[in-house]
Image 1 (cartoon, rainbow, N blue to C red):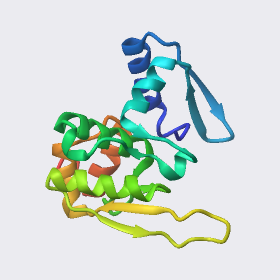
Image 2 (image 1 turned 120 degrees about the vertical axis):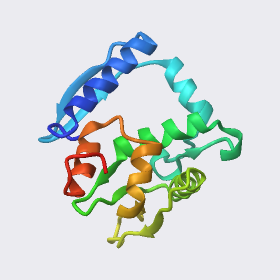
Image 3 (image 1 turned 180 degrees about the horizontal axis):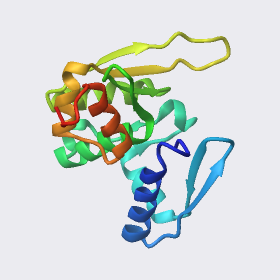
Length: 172
């Protein structure tokens, strides 16, 4: 997470893990601007492993294990919220952008957003030599309002940034 922008969100995640899983979470600064949370738990690993494919290179291959239609709407809502809270960003034009190396997870994300009535566009960022392709799922400004009201953010920095992009102090 970003050390400055995501500091309150890191505290929120730390408290969530400590309260719900009774695990001590360490928060430390890595490099100049990266905040890292660490904890150790076989139970949490097995819980995550029940829902996520992480075979091989997990960054490249991570995806939901179960078919999307076998997962509850609540699970899908919180999954998308958490994914965008951590790996997404809001640009100055009010677009919500999720960038991942896992093509399958980006495609699954688009399907889930569509289930909630939110259109998104998938594209491939320009690939540099010796780098993995990076896929983007963009929720355009006109759909961002739906995202905010139907799914929302736990990372308040991203919500504030989205609202600020609308040149308004209100939530649309």
